[in-house]
Length: 436
Image 1 (tube, rainbow, N blue to C red):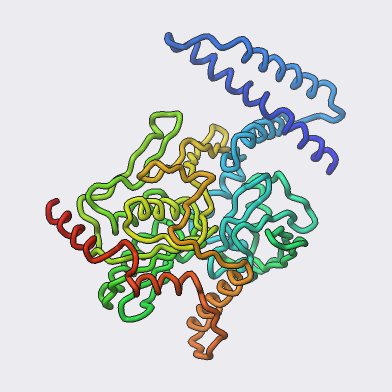
Image 2: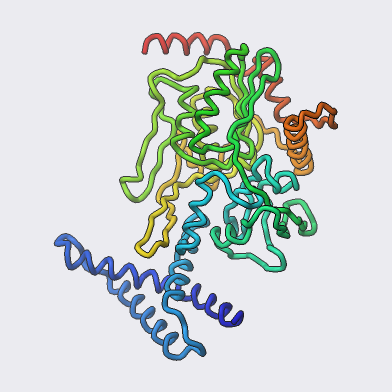
């Protein structure tokens, strides 16, 4: 049976482009029959369809074992979509259901956000408070094995199915990490992944700090509560930490920017082949919160919605972006349900910052580069978890303190005020708000 699956899998990829063309032709033919303005299909297109028909007929008649036509179609469509980019996917009904599980905000797994980069399953970021975070999995780690299975060329949804599982079960993954000579093996115990969006505190009498962990539906309400609380405590300077934030909902990222930027300024826009995908998102006439100097922390694990926020803040010079180059996930995926319960996740547009910078595959370059080593990043992650656990268990025992150099640099900048957010700029901002 394993040989059958292996051979069938090879056929799936080989038929990928042909099968999707076969499906498209029926749509196209429908348009030709029913739409008076439809144009004739190019002869070359028909030749591709003929080739697919020949191959399909040969497989059905001459392959050593009987094949399931549904499996052939699913495999062919999946193979075709895989050639587009690392974010587009075809999902069979089971995979589509699995994708929707995460929207419930709770599931059994490792606690990592993943993407496909260079044909390898790549960690965008580990989620704080999860098994993967505690084990020291890092943004950029490439997962090359699950158990003994080599998973190069795996799809995202196939990977999700392998990595998720009941609480308490073990899984062994092997990762390749840049800078390491040999792959590293981790055995991780799955847990229920509950995503908490916001952590916040006053760093001293004047500097407020919010670590925004994602951009889920509930994140904005928690973010607003944290901001209001910090302001009541006398916050005069603000640090927004988007490190290891993999993104989330576009609308939430736009709303976060509206807290700090007004005057109906452009926040982000999208462009795609379809004019319906060309959207622009603007700030309100007045921003939601007072003007105070701010620093935004980013790193390789900051992606998607995080990059939208950082890009808008940077383009409008509302704050300083500090840290390391971000992930570069700046594309829009539209999930399209299909007739049999499957679905297509298709890249339909790309994000651009207010000044027209494309985020996709590039990311946001910080104003001040403060890169840290992978070893230090692991230690800081572990330290943050220890602090949280001790706080939850109400244990006051001191732990070894490791300096967060990125956070320390942000604090120094805000205290010195030796950057472009000078008092004169604040006065100008206030005058502009009054004019509005």
